[in-house]
Length: 372
Image 1 (tube, helix red, strand yellow):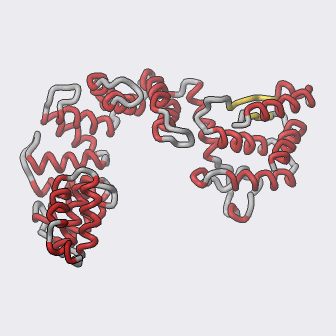
Image 2 (cartoon, helix red, strand yellow):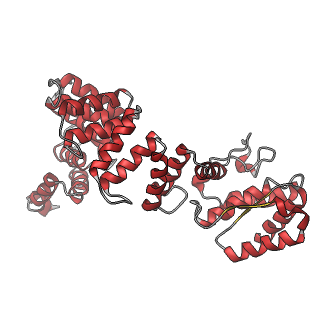
Image 3 (cartoon, helix red, strand yellow):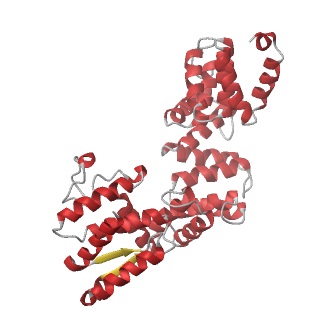
């Protein structure tokens, strides 16, 4: 099939004014193929344009497929070749890139993509943003940094992520500043510097970035890179929470529960925990479960407590896993089930939760365990 793809490339040169070439994992093979095309069609020398070099954030195999997809856009009326090669390429693209229904709006590829109505190729979009980043677009630079940081379409590379975040931040991009601050705070891809982190959070927060407001509030609460200021911490987290940031909403609930930077108010604490929980924040779900277990700001309800503990536990929250184990062991809000209790306690203990570890020590010494 690879030969057919190269044939399609040759047809692209003959039938279009633009030939987009991609350096693939088979670097020499692809380079030689392009050289052959180049010399065979000397009149189109200026139409050959190499856009993807080693070091592009897409991994090599995806670069090859991306290049092939771009070649196909140049095929003009050669729909026979287009159909065969496009169908092959679509099948090779990893599932995570298949939100595209087709490689070209004029041609729907295979029955799997019969609902396609327009060209929308995530790889092409990724390439476009990469080119934007190279030409100095700060938001694109931040997005490419995200790709390296999270391993989206590329192997994780924190150092390169930082380089892109720095470029975005240097142009005043609020997201770039916030992301670079996170790297400085954790020492990820760059030497740890909490003072620099706090300064970048402040710059981003001053532009209204809600996530930076939350992180700066957290810094004031914990004294990270700044002097502790609980009132300032509450103010920043509240501002972030009002913009729908779940982590900030959980913090606001915590501040109200404990009277940190604000007068203690359990009704408001439960309200903010619920907001965070409903956004899927695991800590907020755990804290709301605690409210229901203890009747804090809400009516005591063990069924609700167990439900929220489960949601949090399934996201890996160790405290919620321990509490859910406790619910199963005692039959609170759920049917009593020692095996299920043990399952959740073991998950929690594996993350270092002391209460769960103590329970397991007790359980393994118990008659119930010896009889099981």
